[in-house]
Amino acid sequence: MKNKLPKLSFLLPFLFVLFSFTPAHSQTEFGIKGGILFSNVNAINNNSNVDFANKNGVTFGAFYKRNLLGSLGIQTELLYQLKGANSFIEKYVFYDPNNYSNEEYNQLINAPKSYYKNKEILHYFSLPVLLTFKTTNFLDLYGGPELGYLFSRKSNWEKTGNLNRFSAGIAIGAALKISDKTKLDFRYSTDLTRFDTLDKNSAIDLKNYGFSVTLQKTLFNK
Image 1 (spheres, rainbow, N blue to C red):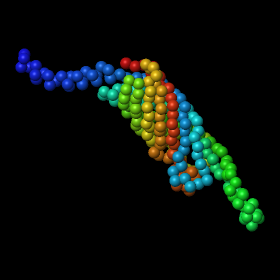
Image 2 (cartoon, helix red, strand yellow; image 1 turned 45 degrees about the vertical axis):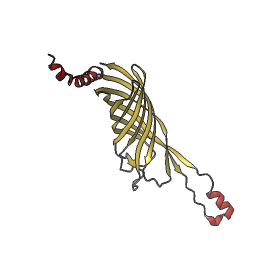
Image 3 (cartoon, rainbow, N blue to C red; image 1 turned 180 degrees about the vertical axis):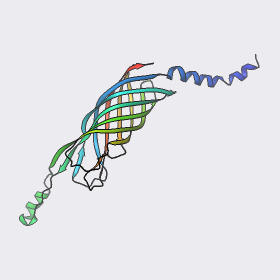
Image 4 (cartoon, one colour; image 1 turned 30 degrees about the vertical axis):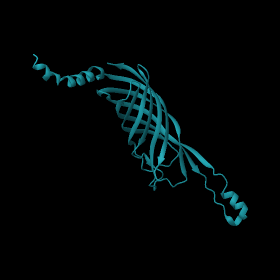
C-alpha cells in the first residue's frame, strides 16, 4: 500500500482539475434580454455630400448559455434589432460670382451649411454566437461572430439594386452581474458586410455598427 501512494500522488493534480471544472461549470442558462441600441451607418470611402449620425433604437430577444470548461462558456442569442442612422444631405446652392460683389460672394460661400435630415430605419433579426470568459464573480467578457437578416427597411434613398439582406459581423462586450439572475450587458458590434451602397453607381458601401446597453435576465438554469 505504501508503494502505491507515490504513484497515486501523480494523479492528484489531474483529479483536482477535473473535479474543479465539472460540478460548478456544467451549468446552462436560458433567459431574455432587452435594452437600447445606439446605431449608426459607416459609409466606407465617403466623399459625398451625405453624412450619417447616431440614431436611438432598441434590441430584445432570448439567450442560451452553456459553460464549457473552467471560466469559458458559449452564449447564443436570437435578437430583434432596430438599427439605422440619421442622415444629413447638404443643400447645394450655386452662386454665380458675376452677380455679387466680392464681399457678398465670400459671405455666401462661407455661410453655415444647411442640410436635409432623413432617417435610415433598418429592422434586423440577429444571431450572435459568443465565447464568454468569466474574469471574476461579477464580470464576464465575451466576443464572437454575429449574423443578421434585414427583414424590413424604411428609407428615403432611391433603390440601388445593391441591397444585401444578409449580414456578417462581430460583437464584443462585457456583462456585469448585478444580482443572482440579472446582468447589465455593454456591447459594441460592427458589420463586416455592406447592406447597400450610397447610390446606383457608387462604390461607397454602407455598413452598420452600434453600441447597446441591455438587461439580461436568467429565467431557467440547471
